[in-house]
Length: 210
Image 1: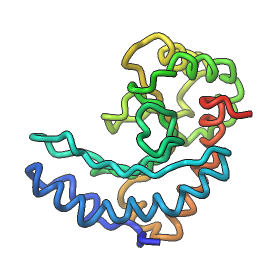
Image 2 (image 1 turned 135 degrees about the horizontal axis):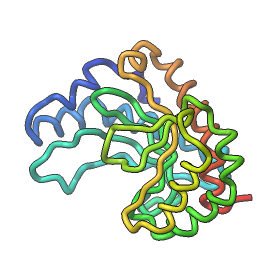
Image 3 (image 1 turned 90 degrees about the vertical axis):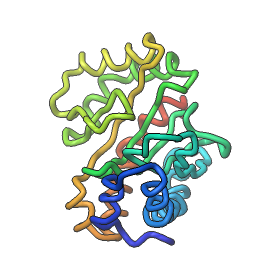
Image 4 (image 1 turned 180 degrees about the horizontal axis):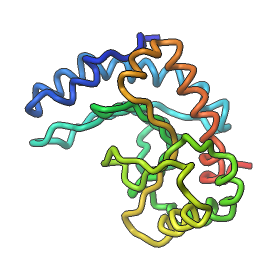
């Protein structure tokens, strides 16, 4: 497995000015580690969910001016793409590492997914750990702590997924960059594994897997 943990220098890639210099650093330093995490977790996630999941490392190919502010590896049930499906992500901003279950705006089944999540709202509210977080926009680093939410807040998120065209919903866990570095390879793999096991039920609900 080509993963040896993350370093402060990995997170500092997002401080490099200019599209080409930052992309070059991303390709050389972070992308091989994301590919390693992909190879490591794809079998685990496939076993947990019952779906065969494929690895997609972000390429940022459409960027022509602005350098990426974050990067990630995604896991989805289609070998050709992930944005249109419920999926999992591991990635980095300059400030932290994120581990997500995600439904983003490109997913055509968002209304059905929102309705399925709404039916299980009480169970989700109870079983997601209080130190986990939610996001309504994958392009922004800010998150909302599950421990600060009411069940009605969750219902609002699930309704929004059904009714708002650009709505998104992500649930998972973030690790401050200093802690992510200190955890090292084994500690980080264990932490990510634990998070995936706790958000896998959301994936199963979204995909209607019994």
